[in-house]
Image 1 (cartoon, rainbow, N blue to C red):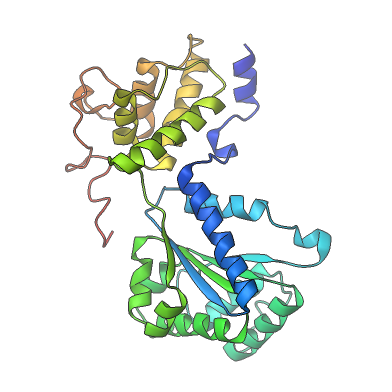
Image 2 (cartoon, helix red, strand yellow):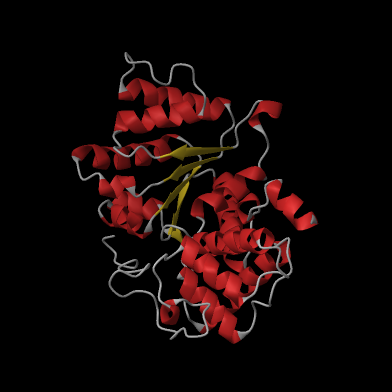
Length: 311
């Protein structure tokens, strides 16, 4: 059938940016801080923090998708750099130069100071207005002098340039700011890009997210928007977009593989078992009739200790 052909052709929710009130707010805030930096000609910082699986990196890719291509105009208005797992001044400088496609990025004879000077020059020459440092929690995780030097390096970069610097990382990223007063002043703006919890405010946002997802599915599907289904999806995914995509991509595949009417509770129940918890009992499967509606946070359950700040 046509849906099967579409799936074999590569359908996945991961091929789509799923717009939500949370993503709209974050993208809007990034651009506001960027424009404020341009207006004041004073470097500013923004922290985007949240747990793994909420879609922070996907958010950054979507923001980048709407930027001018550096290859077509000879400038690089926004630069994305993945933070090295063992950050130091030299390692971080190398990572930035690699992202800038500098042919001398890995030159062994260049000191950290030389690399820093080169970065400042290239940023100005390429018209860079924003540097986004992804996986910024590595600055906290790597508990050595080098990490604190890297934090000072970021502060020095902001002192020497009129750019916006965005730190994107797990929730513990903000502990870096509390260890450095000057850096904390620079990064006073922040976005808590969290998972969807069971609160009055996030229920509406979660419903909006699921409505957007539902509209993208290439097979017929039961409604996701009843209070019962919203709660089942939230508990099945712990409010994390990554788990929603895993479950629903698998549900699409199962519906097409079995050539059934579409996605129903039975298909969702099997998809949860396949993608999240293979040994789940019926009463702990959020899409089974026997589900007891308790969060899956107990021992040996999928989301045990997920909200532990030290995790």
